[in-house]
Image (cartoon, rainbow, N blue to C red; front, side, top):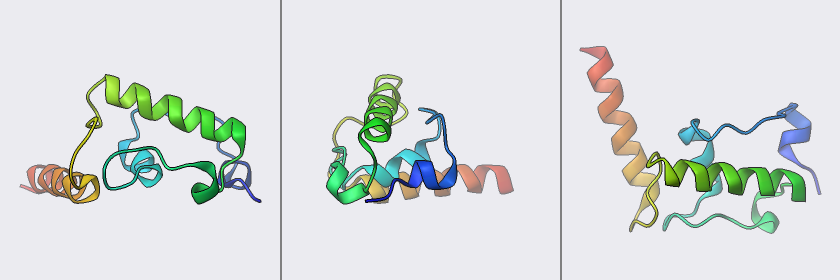
Length: 84
């Protein structure tokens, strides 16, 4: 099993990088397990802590019906504001 964080040389997982953290969540907003993501135990723990911090800081919702479409709409509205 490989760990993408070791492969890419990522040492710190920032809770403010919401678009990166969404990759490790399912559509309901739950954290995906290691067997799906391929993370090492150390990296999975860091990802889960970053996601929990982002949820606590209200950067990510705790539970939604469809997280991926919600984040896409949020990203779309932010890019539309900056392009105007």
